[in-house]
Image (cartoon, rainbow, N blue to C red; front, side, top):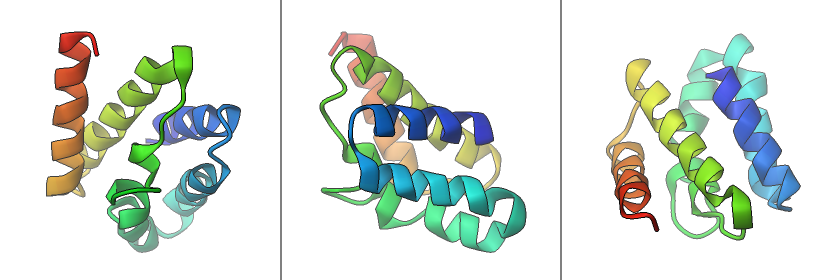
Length: 103
């Protein structure tokens, strides 16, 4: 989980999505010290909501596929940890379809 969060934060910072990078940094900090708060934030609208959520960032240019792959990995790791949500699964499935279609 920490690997994908680190990669996601790096991509967000490199492409000037500082607010969303701060959300991911908070997730990284909570992971080892407060699993309840980590789960709450990981499942929240800050990550999986609408406009302004982590998953909804755009403008990654050549890193778009890496960003989508990181979101898919995050959703998969959440699912493996039994903290996945309907929304995280749905967004990952959409990104997978886009990858398969070359979008």
